[in-house]
Amino acid sequence: EIGGAVPHTLSFAAVRPPGGPLDCRSLPVRTHLEAVSSQMPPIVPAARRNSSAAERRRAKKKRKLAAEEADDLPPGFAAFAAEAAAGGADSDEEDGGAREPDELDEEAAAVQSVDGLDDESEGGASGGSVAAAGGGEEEEEEGREALLAQLLSPELLSLSLSEWRAESGLEILASADRPDKADRLAGWLLAPLSPAQFEEEVRERRPLHISRSADRAYHRGWFGSEELRQLLRDGDLKYTDGLDVTRYTVEGGRATLNGEGAATAEEVLAAFEGGCSVRLSWPQRHSDTVWGLLASLEEHFGCGAGCNVYYTPAGSQGFAPHYDDVDVFILQVEGEKRWTLHAPPAPEHVLPRDPSPDFAPADLGPPLASVALKPGDLLYLPRGTVHQAFTPAGGAASLHLTVSISRRHTWRDLLELGLAGALEEAAAADVTWRRALPREYESFMGVLHSDRADARRAQFSQMAHGLLQRLPPSVAPHPLP
Image (cartoon, rainbow, N blue to C red; front, side):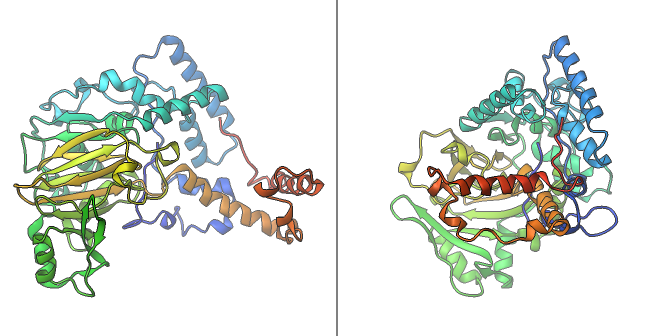
């Protein structure tokens, strides 16, 4: 699985290969993919803890075949392809496979065991090995269908952190730079789950709720209501460009109640006291701690990360039910917030590329889960998970951070970037690519004319396929093992 990117602090297009800037126009597709994939996180095959000896032998044979068939690929992409083919690799390889609770590192030894992962491990892991296994078409199709079925009806994984003896997230951030610093911070964020378990069993597969009743100050110090109020008093915020005032009711839907220009403390806090929710976008512009958190998570996940802050008074809801185009980690800092989750409404909404419009209550099916977040708790939602949240009446105001990853950092985006450069090179080498399309081709091509028996359709399709076959050898399609 590759991680996601949110271009708040790192743009996918801004990746640079060693030795200079990346220019997709001058790179063949496989050279370009090598440059890009060298910056992408490795593909970690899903663990198969209960593999039989025969399955292990087959996995070893696949890895050997992959290595042989990848000999003529560029070095960086050859490793990328070989790793993708090793979907059945033994789960005890370095960084591969989810560790059992008794294999957690010493820092998490005091944490209670992660209930439910062992029973769920094979079902959770099956999706990650679909593309990687390199099996027959029928096996791959079955795997895709199984993964899609799981993502359309995911089960919430609920864990509890009863004790934690490791250093805090802020202590990790303030510590001296070490090669494992980003991974330690990710471990703190996900505890009691290890980062490896999160990749294997949770990421892009199911929502995750971690209760930290033993330490309600777990997220304290990153960004709180006092920091937000101070920004308002300093006059540093503007409506729409960084700050929004919103409210949602079932009867009236969502309303954005922004003023014009500078967002003054008097005006914003009056709206807050009147029941409106305040959203601060890009808090990393104003907070070194949030900036440091995102920078570390970018390093760990190998992609960009973004953040918003949500401040909601008691008895209020700021946003309508919807799903996002990013995976999110919700860090509850102050107060309580109650979340209602729904599965993606249709297969095309699983891991979507774009966010959804607001849903009306009638559009929603039965809830997938209801979760009450209290200070220190964490909620992870894969993109496509429909959600809404409100702050219960009679209590304190709620403030949480939403840290996001996974925007447009997918296989599609990687190949789209590489193929763009490949086509430009092909057009530069062959004048046929630069010729105009036939006159009036719209009158016989396309779905509208698909039922017509027109010889021009066959000629047009033959020309297009012929051009693809005439790609220069350096950019011609090369089957991966």
